[in-house]
Amino acid sequence: MSSILITGCNRGIGFALIKNLVQKSNNSTQLIATCRNINKAEELRKLQEANSNVHILELDLNKFENYQDFSKNVERIVQDKGLNVLINNAGISTKFTRLNLVKVDQLVDSLTTNTVAPIILTKTLLPLLQKAAKIDPANNKSKIINMSSILGSISLNDAGGFYPYRCAKTALNAATKSMSVDLKSDGIIAVSLHPGWVKTDMGGKNAPLEVDTSAQGIINIMETITEKDSGKFLQYDGKTLAW
Ligand SMILES: NC(=O)c1ccc[n+]([C@@H]2O[C@H](COP(=O)([O-])OP(=O)(O)OC[C@H]3O[C@@H](n4cnc5c(N)ncnc54)[C@H](OP(=O)(O)O)[C@@H]3O)[C@@H](O)[C@H]2O)c1
Image (cartoon, rainbow, N blue to C red; front, side, top):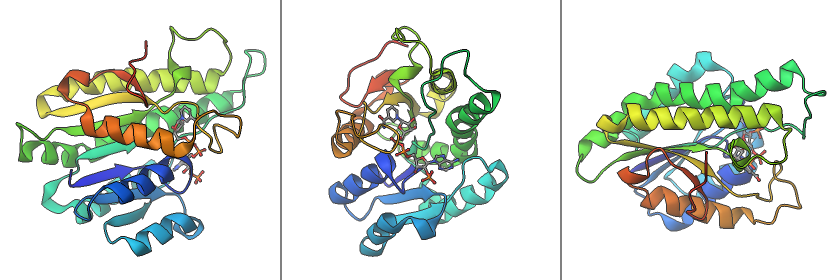
């Protein structure tokens, strides 16, 4: 793969993905890591300083007016090779919410960041994904990985609540399925991915999974998925989840 773009890389799973990819990949894979504020992304900056293939681009996913300029910056890095992998990782969660407590702002904010942003960012970067897929159509599929959550599974929901987060991730899953259908003829694979319950700011310290274990599983999935996996809901360890 010549290029991988991951959103939300200043902390959590996004940072672990970039860190593990740096250790694994050779310098020829361009790793494009986004964050909202480069000045506050100290660890990420250190990775960039030590590795010339790490590129940091600022992107606030809720500022849709900046997407076209962002895409031009991505193009400057990947040039005529296009973009091989897009991991829509950045996301937000709210605390457990019962129906009587849920607020309009929580629902709208969660949908904006967890659903609208990954769809519109994928739309914006589509020409670059198409370009990469065209270079070697027999072997080279471009890949979209939408970071979902098991909480977005309708059939596995036996605890209720979490309206903002569940609804946004379920909607993202619906978008993944449509992307897999719409982009099949372009040679672009789309999957939804549950990273596990991971020790990050979002997952909390009681989460059973170390962030590097999750990241290594996600990288393995990214490297091994083929056309037949497109449109699936996968867990970090390769298990297929029910929608
Ligand atoms: N951790 C888990 O147990 C778990 C389980 C299931 C699914 N997930 C999913 O995995 C993904 C990563 O989660 P995580 O645990 O790494 O979360 P995290 O530690 O809370 O990190 C979230 C990342 O998303 C970024 N982000 C949030 N809103 C953004 C916006 N509007 N624009 C740009 N960046 C934004 C954050 O940037 P700032 O630092 O600027 O806020 C941060 O880099 C999310 O999609 C989450 O829903 C996580």
